[in-house]
Image 1 (cartoon, rainbow, N blue to C red):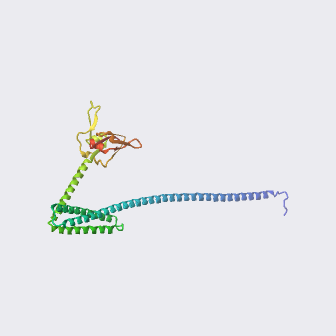
Image 2 (tube, helix red, strand yellow):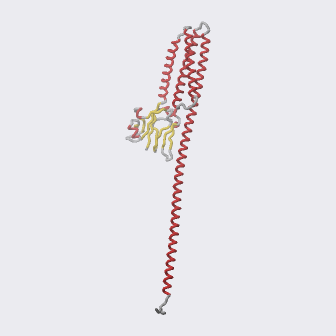
Image 3 (tube, rainbow, N blue to C red):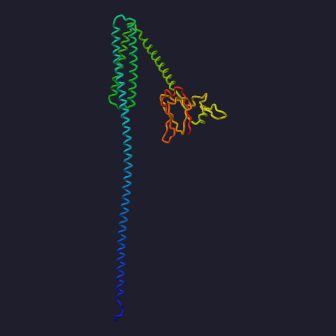
Amino acid sequence: MKIDENIDPKPVDDNAEARKKEALIRENEKKEGIKKAVMTTSIIGIVVLLIVVFIAHSIYKHDHKLLVSQMEIQKNSFTEKLTSRDSSIGEWVTTFGEIEKNIALIKEKEHIISTNSSAGELSNNKKQQILEDIKYINTLLEQNKKKIASLNSQLTKSGGTIKGLQSTITGLEASVKQSESDIADLKTSLLGKKFEIEQLSTEKTVLQDTIVQKNEKINTQTNEMNKAFYAFGTFKELKAKGLLTKEGGFIGLGKTKTLSGSFRDSSLTQIDITVMKSIKLNSKSAKLISEHPANSYKFILDKNKKIESMEITDPVQFWKISKYAVVEITK
């Protein structure tokens, strides 16, 4: 077969070269795509890792704060318990000392009574002194019984966790019982000397009743002396309670706001003037309508310049003129 010499072979070579270039370009693009994919995956992985680290740190920080807060609460609780326990122990030690002191006084009085009663014929003065000493012993015994009962009650409330306390109380109870036994023997011996021992119990009861009545009367009088009343509100509110009224003026002008001539104590709040030293108002303005010395009180402002409360700086002077404090406020 004869080849035509006029046909040019270059186009065939050009096509092959173009295909190679295209294949090379596609290969490069593929590699670039892989690189970008790897880089994107790496970046995403780093971002995810950072997010995980951030979340883990936040959780740790939150848990750490929560743990610190719980530890602080536990510490404060333990501190309060220790303080309370130390205070209780101090009170118990004081009570122990008082009981032991009373026991020592009882023994001292017993010795005095025994000595005086053994001196043959006793004068009326001697007998009277012995009776007074026995009354005193009875009082000390009653005090010791009450103190021991109080100690037992405190021990029960504490759960009996303080070692040695029960044995100490038991020892004191035994001492008190021994004292009672000794006094009973002493009274028996005095019966032979024509002492009216039964009279002692009666006189003791009458004396205790008298003391109780006297204390109740004093407490009642003290409570009455320390009792006072207060009220605050707008003029409309106070008028509705029958506490305020307007007087004077001319044709409705210039009237003065004053306390009503008659109102019920139940319209006000009762307080103990030895305890209540401040009245919460929370108002824009306030005016004390009842009569009280100006230097015995002051109004306290908050950070917004509103009247937070009325502080009674001198309770004795403040309540000296009137036991009723009425404050008109503007809300």
